[in-house]
Structures are given as C-alpha cells and as structure tokens.
Length: 409
Ligand SMILES: Cc1cc2nc3c(=O)[nH]c(=O)nc-3n(C[C@H](O)[C@H](O)[C@H](O)COP(=O)(O)OP(=O)(O)OC[C@H]3O[C@@H](n4cnc5c(N)ncnc54)[C@H](O)[C@@H]3O)c2cc1C
Image (cartoon, rainbow, N blue to C red; front, top):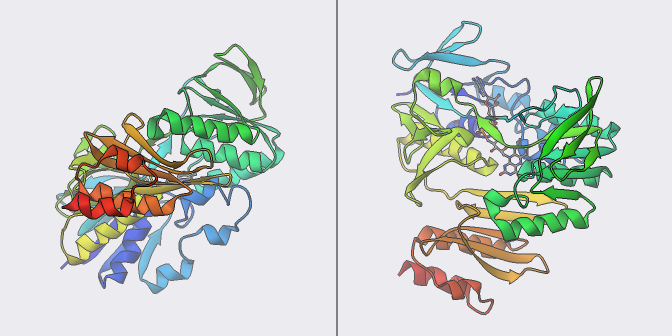
C-alpha cells in the first residue's frame, strides 16, 4: 500500500493529481513541492482575462488555501527539487533537505525561451508565471507601443489582449504566418487577417536584425524587412524549453525534449510524469506525443491519480485545447502538425468552420472555429482510427454523425 506520494510541480498536472488522489479515496500522505512562489493557479488566464484586468486574482487560483488543509495536501512553495535517488526513494532539494517518497509524480512544465542576442533590458518580458503576468499587466499600463516577438498561441493571445487594452501592437514572426507549425498556412493566414482587422501590425516572415537601446531599455528594433520600429515594451513569446534538469538528474529516460512515459504515464516503477514534459505513448495514435496544453496537463494529473489509487492502466483521452483571441474561439482535438493534409468544412468567411487534419487517410486532429459540435464529432472520428472519405468530411450536406458509426464498422 502506497503511503507517501510526492508531487514535484504545482501546475496543471501536479495540482490535479493531488486533488484527484483524494477524490479517489487515497488516504496516504500527499505533498506538492513547487518552485513557484504562489499556490497553483490557472495559467491560461494569464495571457487573457487576468492580463486584461477582467478577473480578480482570487479567481485565478485553482483552490482556496484552506482546500489544501482540508484535503490534507501538504503544499510547499518555493521549493526547488535538484535531484535524488530513485532506488533509495528520496528527493533532494537545492537546500540539501531530503524528502522520502513511495510514489513520485513529476509535472514540471517549461521555461520560456530567450531570444539569442536580445538585450537584458527591463522592458523585455516573457510570460509563464502569475508573477510574470502581474509584471506584464503593470508594464502594459505604462506602454503605448508593444512589440511581440513570436506569434504562437501565447504571443497571439498577448497581442490580442494588448490590442484590447488599446495599445499599438506589432507582431514580429519569423514563420510565414502566425501559428504556422501548429495549424498550417491557411489557418495561420486567417489568424493574421483577424489580427490585422483589429489593427495589429503583423510582420510575418520577419526577424529582428538589430536592437536599439537607451539606457537600460529597448526602444526599438531594425527588422529584416529593413524597417526600424519603435517600441516601449517587448514581449518574447517564442515557446518554452521543457524543464528536464530534474528528470535528467534522476536518470529518467529522455527522448528529444520529453520524459518517455508508457501508455499509462509511467516512466518507471512508481514514477509518473505528466503535462508539458511528458512524452506519452498515446494508445489512440500509437505513437509518442508531447503536448503543451492545459487540459492535457490536468487530465494527465487525473490519469496519474487513477493509476496510483487503482493500479496502472492506459491513458487514452485525446488531447484538447482552446484559444480565445478577440471574439474568435478556437477548439482543437487530437494531435497533428500544420503539415498534415487539411480538409475544410463549413463557413470560412463567416468564421464558423472546422478543419480535419489527415495523415495516411486517418483523421489525426480537428480544429474548429466557433463550431463545437463538429469538434466533438471529429474527436469520435479520430478515436475510430478508420479511414474516412475526404469528400464527406468536406461536404456541408454530408451527415458527420453518420460517418462515426460507419467509421467504426
Ligand atoms: C500565459 C499562458 C497561457 C496559456 N494558455 C493556454 C490556453 O489557453 N489553453 C491551453 O490549452 N494551454 C494554455 N497554456 C499552456 C498550459 O498552461 C500548460 O500546458 C500547462 O500549464 C502545463 O502544465 P504542467 O503541469 O505541465 O506545467 P506547469 O503548469 O508549468 O507547472 C509546472 C510546475 O513545476 C514547478 N517546477 C518546475 N521544476 C521544478 C523543480 N525542479 N522543483 C520544484 N518545482 C518545479 C513550477 O514551478 C510549476 O509550479 C498557457 C500557458 C501560459 C504560460
């Protein structure tokens, strides 16, 4: 019988694992060790409602402080775990303190990448933590022209929020369109058009050639299109580096940028890994995937809790995420790349459509703009792992629900 579960990381995966363990009746000790200065919070708010000042701080936290006490979850903040020994079942904090465990859960997230060559100036910010969002929120109040480096999801959302706050916004993105790698050229172009229609200056296929500084501040940049642009706030949003120092120090299996876990999110006996750092052998896709999204991290946490409380199993929930920019809601289920074949269905002009991403005739993912119903049905098509007829997917007259049982036959 497991007595003590130690969770490293107080983010989406770690917090969900702790509470789900109690929900499943686990009555041993549970500790969360988190490097963060704040108790676990809802990260997606940080680039949207919280950044714009539309929700209060209290709403951003995942649980009240009292919930940790009532659920007997020990939450230790500002604790960085540096290493330890899996065979001796103990962790070592940077302070030298040793923490024993029976079962270990890692949900370590990532660290924003820094742009090579960018000056270390006090108006160049990145966004990952609650404190980052608070600092950015303050900086935005003083700023009038914001330069966003990178138009991935976080960059695009911060651009939208900054614009909604009435700031002038310039996006510098080296890919040909925003969100190119994740969603492909056509959807990326659509996003570029949406941002431009709101007054954002989107420079795709562009990089910074030279930074201009005055004292301790960046005041602008010369871009690869030859133009010099002023800015009084620079936000770098070029992705994260998954936090793998601890898994490395513990000798866990690492491939590329993730910790290798089996279909049940297990790295080795009694050690589970979820969220952004997990390279999960997904049973539906039959391949290893690593996903940097909130719902995935939370569901990994719950899946890990189920494995600890009830015995190892297989975690087969499809990845799912959403992104809100202005009044446009995007939902995405599955796992594909922007390079996969895209089959469109619905009203493109009216921004009410879905895109199915196919590989070798199988639906790998479905993206929907303001079209939730199709997104849910698309999920069933993905799970069926049967080939579907592209023209039926594309045709607005074809009954999508009808394809689901047919695909299963
Ligand atoms: C601003 C922003 C907006 C986002 N919006 C969306 C969205 O709209 N939709 C969506 O699907 N996804 C969104 N995401 C992504 C989503 O938040 C992440 O995928 C998710 O938080 C990953 O959860 P995690 O548990 O893996 O890591 P995290 O939530 O990052 O938590 C990691 C935790 O581990 C701790 N930690 C790391 N190393 C150590 C160590 N050695 N010792 C102790 N503690 C350690 C950290 O301090 C942190 O508490 C957003 C992310 C950001 C930053």
